[in-house]
Structures are given as C-alpha cells and as structure tokens.
Length: 512
Image (cartoon, rainbow, N blue to C red; front, side):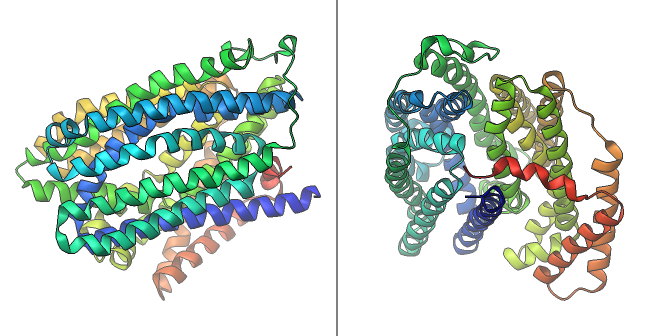
C-alpha cells in the first residue's frame, strides 16, 4: 500500500471511529437520561465509579506495557520478541483480572450498602465482576494493535464492543424499567459485561490472525535498546514489570481517590440542604449529561494522540530529540485549534444543544459553564499521550493522583457551602491543576516553544467571529454548528493560523 493511500485510509478510519464511538456514548447517555431520569443516571454514575476502580486493578498498567514493549521491539527490528512479550503480558493480565473479579464480588455488598449507601447498586456490582478478566486481557491486545498501528482492526474491535453494549443495555432497559429503579440500574451493567466478553473473543481472533506474520525467534539479550530508564534493560518480563508495576501502583492510588471523590460528591451535595434525589439528579446531569457533550468531540483528538504515542516512543528510543520537539509543536498547534473551536461552539450553542439533546435547561447551563474547560481537558489529554511515549507514564499518573487527591479534599470543603456551584469549582480546579502539572513535566522532558499568539489568541478570535456570524443566520443547531466550524476554519486560514504544512504530522499515523 502506498504511503498516500495508507494516510487517507488511516485518517478516514480514525475520524469515522472517533465520531461513531463518541456519538454512540453520548446518544446512549441521552437515551438513559430521557428514558429513566436524572436520578437513575446519578445511580449509574456511582456504579461506574466503582467499575473504573475495579477496571484499573484488572488492567494494572499492562495495556501501556504491551504497547511500549511491542513498539520498542519493532523500533529495533526485534520482531521475534513480539509474541513472547504479548504472551507474558496476557499471563500478567489474567492474574490481575481474576484478582479484581474476586475482590469486587467479595466486597460488592459492603461497597453498595456502606460506601455508595444505595442498595440498588449491590447486584449490578456483583455482575460487573465477571467482566474484569475480559477487560484485562483485552487491554493487552489493544496495546499490541496500538503499537503496530493496525487501525482497522483496533477500530473494528471498539465499534463491535460498543455496538453490543448499546444493543444489550437498551433492550434490557426497556424490559426492566417498568419493574423499578433497582432493575433499571442493572440494564447498562449487563451491557458492559456482555460487550466486554464479546469484544475479548473478537479481538483475540483478530490478534491470532495478525501476529502470525512475526516469527518465534527470541530477541538477543545483548540487543537491549539504548533507552533511558528501567524499561531499557533486561528480558521481556523485567521490561514488562518495570513499566506495568509502577504504573499499576500509582494508578490504584489515583483511581481510589477518583472513586472516593465520586462517592462523596452526592453525599456532600445533600449537606448543602437539598434532598438525596436532587443530589443524585444534579450529579447525574453534570456527569452523565453535560460532560459527555463536552467530551464528545475529543475522541478524534485522543485517538490521534494514541496513534502518535508509538511514533514518539521510537523517536525517544533513537534519541531523535529534534523530531520529538517538532512533533509536539505541530500537534499542540492543531490540538488547540481544534479545542478552542469546540469550546466556542459549545459555549455559543449551549442552550440549543441542551434543548435538542435533553430538553433540559439545567443541562444547557452546565454545558455552557463546562465548555470553557474543553481546551484545558483536550490539551491535557494530548500532553499525557506524549508523556507516556517519552517513558514518563509514572509522572502522568502521579499528576492524576495529585488532581484526584485535591478534589477529595476540596469536595467536603466546598460542596456543603456552595452546592452544585462548589462541585463545578472542584472540577475546574482539578482540571487546571492537572493540565498545568502535565505541561510542566513535558517542558522538563522535551524542549518546545509555546507560541501564545498563534496557538491561543488567534484561535479565540476566530471562534468568536465564527459563533457570532453563525448566530446571525441561525437555521437549526446542526447546520449552524457546521457553519460555525467552516467559518472558524476560513478565518483561521485568513489569519495565517492554518497552513498546508501543518497537517504533515498526519503522515506519522500511516498504516504499515
């Protein structure tokens, strides 16, 4: 396949997958909130906070370890070590997945009744335990596909998993909702468990077919790559553990803080003087309705960053620092162009989006408030991808732990006094802190210039002009969002902020 055709196909697959997955996630949240109500959405978000902690234990850093090991072996032509690396990663993942399954099943009652203080969550948590081994091993296969950049196979696996999840959960919700909230909460959980199992078997078949091209020769022990850090030396097991164990330990801490934060949020909202139902509803609107809209466009950017991570790893392995700095500068410019455009559109059309999606003025208000965080969150996501490619994954998790710990401390301090506004303040403080620390760490690791005028001021001006112009000729929400995006691109081009060479970085994501 020629480079140009590979680039076109890769870009098309990347875009279509990101749009489909984010649209499906957001549509599913819209469906649940409209079908079951904000309170059920709040309960579901509590269950998901426990699920994310259990999934962190199940994965235990092995997904990134798989990506790094395979990318390093490919970068130095050691294809014979790829099968062995993936097998060892799968063995590790099976152990951690089963451990997470056991812990979640044993402590489901304690978690639901004592921690979440909601008996409706106990049975769903029991059932979620079954998904843990599938999640852990799937993360290894996903890491492999990321490293070898099999975009078509990785995308098909993601779409398959999400399609199964939505289909099972939607069908089950229609059956169980008339029986009450306890049963309605079970529907999305059933969708998660069934889809994770199905996705594992689907991915495993793809992996077995793909990995046949690599021979079974073990890499020579003397051929260790000239990398800095512990991951540079030793055999496969030592390299795997040097990446996964530190990342796992710090991830446990970060996820534990995050789960505690989600659990105590509704409890502290109640202390502001509102009822338990209102607290769950407000929490559900922000977490389950407004935030998915804010994060919906980010899928394309994050997928692009994940594809560039192996490329950055290869540059780092060969000590090509000029290429690293050039890549960072180009991607940051594109990322902020994209993020500021999204923020402007979300802010300008928040009322129309809230009405079109949820028929909720509260959702509209929260979309408007949180839209200003979009550039911070998107930029932080790309920064984290670069740091992981530069062997600074432990630093990334430490920063995330710091953010979560700060949020846990701020929640009981602000929410009882300020209610929902206090919760919004906690979100803002945490995201800004995370982004600032991540950028500081990246600046220490790789030198690059931040061009404030081109990366910030010009895009903000372009977004302002685009939204104002689009509002003047309003037809409907979808047409005017597209119009605003087109005007934003035109104004950015006229200001010299978009140039043809800016998109050359996409060549790094071409398929093999």
